[in-house]
Image 1 (cartoon, rainbow, N blue to C red):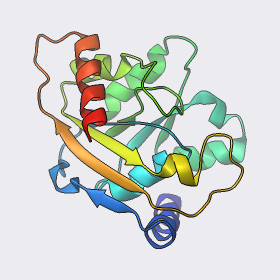
Image 2 (cartoon, rainbow, N blue to C red):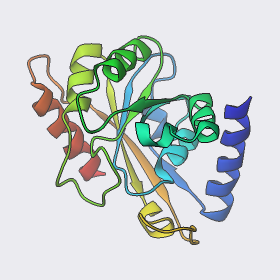
Image 3 (tube, rainbow, N blue to C red):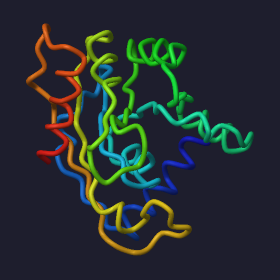
Length: 189
């Protein structure tokens, strides 16, 4: 129920105040798990992707967000799972693979909010190769202006989400190869 309330509130926020434009959501699988890999420039990105994706997705979120018990409860209610970013988090990787047996999972290859792809992690490639699920790339635009990193309050503006299937992943690709193909797909949008 909390998920539905949050989804409705964010839907109204993004579609009425920010006139969210969505392209390519028809390519998203409706009845099978997949990885949703997106750029991450703003705190608006996770809820925006959750609202614009036509199926419910689970999230990897930095473990620091789970320190506040009330916020942790809300994050868990919307499907977020904590991820330790400072070390290899085997428990979160195993949970991600378990989730991907039946549900989609959102991953930010940058690992943190950033306006560029100077530093990316190969976790998306690793999880993709192990789970053997398709990858949908998503490019979020405008959130870096309406709610930039460090801002206390959002501003008005336009936002956009574009989805695209990453269709050039081969069985013999390494984790790094897959990650680079996903990043290239995001950048191309």
